[in-house]
Figure 1 (cartoon, one colour):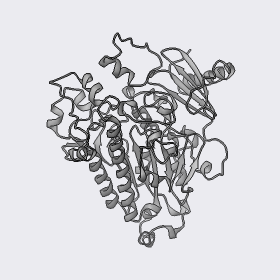
Figure 2 (cartoon, rainbow, N blue to C red):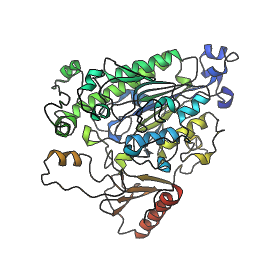
Figure 3 (cartoon, helix red, strand yellow):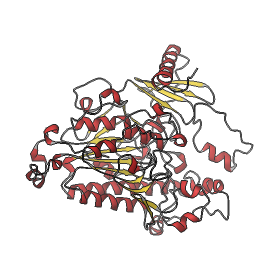
Figure 4 (cartoon, one colour):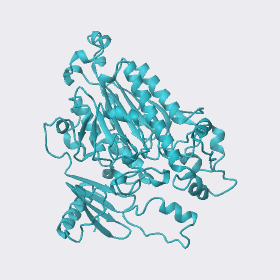
Length: 507
């Protein structure tokens, strides 16, 4: 995830743990004493598809991510701030609830000028900052907009700003085949290279990995903050190079042809993993590409003798979705939804000189903790007070200095707070399949308070209560037997929403 570099004196790191050539130059350039930060953000990676976790799906194998877990603290109850990408990434980058500025879904995501991102902060401290891959912290339609990566702290950017990056087609001609706005929204066409748009050739994850390894080699003597915004294992998982299709023994699925059929008809038949031929096989191939990229980046750090001085964070932006045949085993729900499968994700932080390698932390933590934890590892909470963040510096909790729970309470809003359930005359129709592939109700809110979680379904106005300590699958509704707990958590959520976040009042 992130490689953090701070002053050795501030870190109190043993100089012997740093490569000799760096320690010899410490008097000439204090930057060499500061740890690097690597932030690895997977896209739609489910809890059950990461083999670093014991209850993963048997067919999900991520050996390089497992290797990363062996030098990290692995979080079994690591939450993101939203079950969908744009808001979730805002929570990661700011360490704050994005609801503070009214963002709860990708369609209204934005980054206010007065919010400081992790990239901006580290750049101000002399870090070389780069983002390779998917940005998607709002609807950045121009290079001067706040949501564009180079306007919020990234000096180098290669990738796209939207929610998807096509895996194989990266030319202007490719993009011109499709009508607006889908030609951009669906990720077809050229990429940004800093502020310029250029065509590229090759497989997306390979291109991004090459950019990352080159960046590490070019900046090995300077502190750097590298963010990998993977598009794996997001759609379009049907896209696999021909040589890999032959090895897998499966057929090629062509991209949507607007001259032959409507977009939604193609999406349901071929674009969504739950309906496409060999959907799970395709998802697992993409999972292997994600894992391979992580391995190549780790190998580069090892070859350059930077591992000991690099803080690495790995996280998924939200849970998996049936739309790409992903799994969140043993959790219920998935992407778009406020069940555990949409919110609880693979998450680990590693920095062996400060945190115990190979340890497991079982209390609830949040993606908002990444920013203040990085600052805590650097002993560098100077510009911000702890009250600035909604996240917590996890260092004292992970080292046993603080035995309390980092977050007694966490809050979430759905993609909308209310709405009607669409009715379909034909449940096998394209429209019905597309809607129900989301998994169910995409509205309402949720609150976790210690072990209890209250879920409000905005469309049905139903409330359900679960004890996550005993019921990780959220299968036993306790709302009827514990009405006072329901009332207490509901009032607590209303206070957070109406007063703390200053959002439109809920009744």
